[in-house]
Every structure is written in C-alpha cells, then in structure tokens.
Length: 328
Ligand SMILES: Nc1ncnc2c1ncn2[C@@H]1O[C@H](COP(=O)(O)OP(=O)(O)OP(=O)(O)O)[C@@H](O)[C@H]1O
Image (cartoon, rainbow, N blue to C red):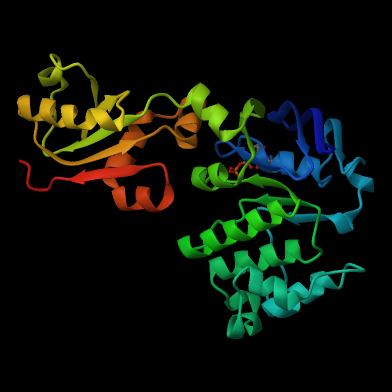
C-alpha cells in the first residue's frame, strides 16, 4: 500500500523548547492514524510539519511530494485554531472555501453532513455556538473532497450526539478510502476511529500500534472498581484470593474476569466492607495513555468510579455491573 504521509527524523525547536525531537512515522493510503499525547507534546507541530505550514529539520512527504509542492486540492486541513471571517454565514464560508478549488463538493451537502442545517447555515459565524463553529470548520476542511485529511482536535466543543455523528461521517470517509491524520485528547474518539495510534510525549513518538496492540502491551489488567461508603481498609481482604488496593474513594480488584465478580462481592461481604457501586472495566487506550505518560492511575480510578454515567456513554468497553445503593 502506498505511503501517503512520511516523516523521517523530523525535528523542530522553538528557542530552547524541542517541540519535535526526531519523529519518524508513515501513514498508508486509506489509513486512519490517531495521534495522542499530553498538552505541549508536539502534536500540532507534527501536523504543521506534515502539512508544510512550519519549517522543520528532517524529511517530510505528503502524497509522494514535499509538502510545499503537494497537490493542495487533494489535502484537507482542520487546524486546531481556525478563525475564519466572523461576518460570513456558515453557508457563505463553506462556499468561499469551495470556490478556492476547481472542483468541490456542494457546500449545502457538506454542511448537512456535519449537521449544520436550516437557520444555522444562514447565521453569521460569530453567532454560532462553539460546537456549530467547529462543525462549520470541519465542513470547510471537507469541501474539496480531500484524499488526505488532517483533523487537529476536530470534536472539541461538540456535544456528545454531534460528536458521534461526526465520528460516523469520518468512518464513512475512511471506508471510502480517505487517509485521515487525527489528533485528539478523547481516547474514546481515537480508539474508535483509528487503525493505528501514535503516542507523542515531549516531542518523541514513544509508542505506535493498533489500539488493540497498544492495550495488550501497555493497558494492564481488567479490574473491578468498588465505590465504598467509607474509607476502605484493603487489609480486611488480605485473606481473599484477590489483588486489592485502594484508589481514591474505593477499592480496586485487579485482574478480574466477569466470572470472578460474584466471588469478589462475597469477599467484600465477608470482610464487612460496604459499597455503593461496582464497575468492571477492561483496559483501554486511556490506560495506555496513563501508563506511558506516567499520569496517575488513581485519577482514572476516581473518575471511573465517580462518573459511571459518563463512562457508560463515552467508553464502550466499560460494563457497569451493579448499583448496590442499599448495601451499607
Ligand atoms: N509558535 C510557537 N512558538 C513558540 N513555541 C511554540 C510554538 N508552537 C508550539 N510551541 C511549543 O512547542 C511545544 C509543542 O507544542 P504543540 O502545540 O505542538 O503541542 P500539542 O501536543 O499540540 O499541545 P496541545 O495538546 O496543548 O494542543 C510546546 O512546548 C509549545 O509551547
């Protein structure tokens, strides 16, 4: 398969700051590549390097050419910060971008694809909500029907339903053969959309693989999160066969399969530990991220146990197994 994007030993410094410290990667035709990493890791700088919007050391090619001579009509770019003219309507704006190309899609159809319809299409850009603005910008990036599409945090500010419909749109573009280079802080988004994921930290690509490969290699064990009523004492469970530790406001049983949950509940009862809820989770890309960036697992445990509804809507692998409000 042809390599649509190639970076070899790409370096970029801003004064004393090494934004990219020798990054090499390639993205094949039709592949969706997700780039993750903490704030300041260098993701936007790498997008800018690949699109030729900043000068770098090393070699970059896009569609077989250096970025400065690539066929722009085949490239779509949604930058992280994009501030189009605010006194144009969404329809005028997308029509303006369509007019820059010899061949472009019908702006109306592209706006419909991203969920901007009716009165919203006739509203001035400055009067749209944050999510509607972002959708309009996505439409502008899609209007030339690009073969390779760069999306730098495309769904920031878009509500959950809009985010899911945008994911479906991106999936249909990928199914149609569009190569997508996506950066995002939403692990659910990256895990769902990407064929391969790269994790950038301090300007270095520290891991690359399919989501499943990365989870296998770095995600750790599945676990049962137990939200307890009072500060728990894991020593009470020392005689059980489980590996148990404290995390935030509860306990974590590590390495449990769903079949072990009944035994874990009995062990809690035997130890006299009362609990409010149980949540069984499989490791996912967020665990990979936390493990490789050295961010705390405790934060994950707390947010999982404390926001079950959000976890259910965002992380499809989480299975909320029981609410036991009466157990005290
Ligand atoms: N134009 C610039 N001038 C000076 N420093 C810059 C510039 N652009 C980026 N940097 C620095 O380079 C580093 C990488 O920034 P970059 O925007 O690529 O990170 P990022 O991973 O995209 O971050 P975020 O997730 O916050 O968007 C940061 O330390 C940033 O401050």
